[in-house]
Length: 345
Image 1: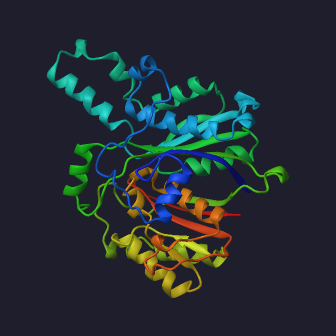
Image 2 (image 1 turned 90 degrees about the horizontal axis):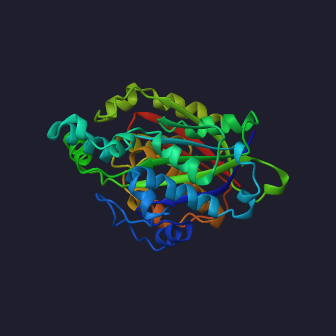
C-alpha cells in the first residue's frame, strides 16, 4: 500500500519551513548554522518550556508545525487514531550529560528531578502527545526504522495519521568524539523533522507518496570509521543491485561523497544506472544530521518532486533537471543503519 505525505514540519540548519529551505537550495545558500545549536521559536508557554529538555522542544516544534500546516483536516481527526513514531541517534544527550554532571559534582539527593525526567528518549513523545492530545500508536526508535513502522501501522489500519519524526540535537562533546573517531570533515547539523503520513486515497491524489522503505544493518559500529574496504565487505553492492533491478527510478539521493559509502554509491549508480540523476549535495545545506539523515533527504526528494526540478546546487555536475516522477533515497545514519526509500508523485 502506498502512503501519502500529508504534511511536514521541521527545524533545520537550512530553514524551519519548506519555502525557506527550497529558496536556500535554489539560491545555493549553503548552511551556516552548523556545529552549533540552531534557533527556533518555542511553541509552548515559558512555564511548560522550563519543564522540557531542548530535545523535546525541537521535536514538539516540528510536530506542532506539521499539524498546523493541515489545519482543519487535523482538527476533525479522531485523536485516538493519531500517533507519533519517532527516531533518534543519540537522544537528549545534552540533558543526559547535565544529569551526569549533577551526579558527579553534587550529592545524588540534590539532582534535579526535572532534568532526570527528561533524560529518557520517550519524554519527548509524552510532551507531543499531551500538547496535541493524541493517543494513537506512539514510540521512540533508533536507526531510522520509524518510516517502516509507521507504514506498517497505517497499512494495518491501526491509525489514520502517523507523525513520523526524527530529532538530533547538537552537542559539543559529541562533535569532539566524532572527530576523534575519523569524522573530522563532517560538519554536524542539528535538526528535527516530522512527516504526517496517511493511507493513500483518491481524494489525496495530489500528495507525494512513500511507496517503498526498507532498513537494514551493514555491520558497522556507530563510531566506526567506514573505509572503502569495509563498504565492499558489507555487500552493499548486492543489496543495491537487487533493489534497482526491481525499482525503476528517475533520480537517486545518495550519501555525501566525502564518505566511502557515498563514493561507492556514486560509482555504483554511474556504472549501472546511467539514466539516473544522482543527487549528492544534500549535506551542503544540512550538514551531517546523524539520526535525521533519512528524513531530511526525503524532504529534499519531496521538494524536488513538487517543484518538478532538481536544481544545479544539489548535484556535482551542476545541471538542472526536470520531468521526473520517482526519486529514491539512500541513507545511512550514526547507528549504522542503512535505509532505502522511494517517493513518487
